[in-house]
Length: 192
Image: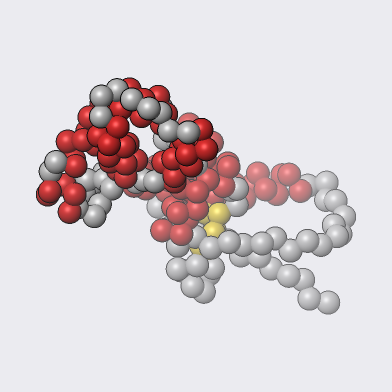
């Protein structure tokens, strides 16, 4: 068997890399068949493909039904969405955000969280669920959370009882929630 010249081999390798997985094995099979005896070994070395891949490509060339299929993978192939594979994801997400959710007093559909995306990822990991910030974005959108930007202003001064005030608010919040009462948070602005 006579190998191809080096420039032709380089072109074949570039073309092979541009193909889909299905088309690669079929192209390799055609080249191996063209070369005859020793062609399979030569093509496997040229393209770096496994002998089973080449054998599958040859079998597909002989099967008219497979050649007529337009799909690269079988129906249902590929990685499943985490929403399909992890049934408790939504519940865990809502549990994590339960104490970190606020909303509009005039529109119950508008809600937001004070947690950052990476903080939600960490809290979900503590629940035994590993997700990326992209999945957190999808969960926030799915459960109608909106982005809320803080307005940057200069501090007007420190209050010596500031921490006590927030501790009292948290205590009252816990007491009301324990008996099943709703909590409504409102920001007020002082008008001069």
